[in-house]
Length: 270
Image (tube, rainbow, N blue to C red):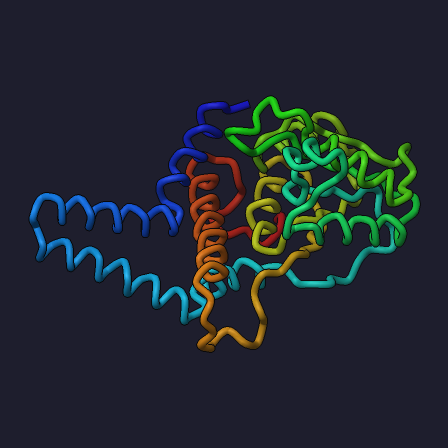
C-alpha cells in the first residue's frame, strides 16, 4: 500500500496536534527570553496561556467533533438480514496486550462491545476485524490489532469459524482495500460497519469509493448531545477531544484530495 502517505500523515500530525503546538509556543517563548526579546517572549507566552485557558473552559473539542458524530444516526434501523459485520481496528492496544499477556483495549472499546451485541443479533453473519498497527513505533510489534481481537473474541465466546481477521492494514484506506481483497463481497450482500462515530464519515467515504456499500453503525461517541454550550474546566480532556476532532477533519481533507474517499464530507454511498 502507500507507505509514503502513511508515514507523511503520521509525521505531519506529530507537529500539528494541539498539545504539540502549545509546547512549540512555550519553547519559542523560552528561546526569545534567552535572546533577550522580552517583549516578544511575553506575547508568545501570553498566547499560549490564553489558548490553554480557552481550551480548558470551553468544550472546543466537542464543537469540532459534533458534526462528525452527528453525520450518521446512532442506533440506526437495521436490516432483517445481514451477511457480515465489519469492525475497524483502533480499540485494541497491541503493545500493552503483549506486555501483559491479555487483551487490552482503550477508550474506543465500544467497537468490540457493539460488534459482540450485533453478532448475537445476527448469528449467521460473519465478523470481519481489520487492523494491523497504526503506530510508527508499533510497526513490527509482537501483536497486531487482529491478534488482540482474536483472543478477545474467543474469550467472549464468539465461534472462531465466524471470525475473519485482516492483520496487515495501517490506516483506514488500507483497512478497506485489504479487507475487500480478502472478502470479495458479492453484489447484494449486506455488511454493517462498526467504528467510532467521529470516524464514520471518512470510513464510509472510503468504502463507497471502493465500491463496497455498507450500513453505518456508529459507536463510541465523545460528545454530549444537547449540552454543547457550557463552561466545564478540564484542560487535558478538552485537548484530547480537540486533537481527535482536528485530526479527523484533516484526515477527511487529505483523503479527499488524494482520491481515497468519495466526498469531502461523506454522507453515504450514492
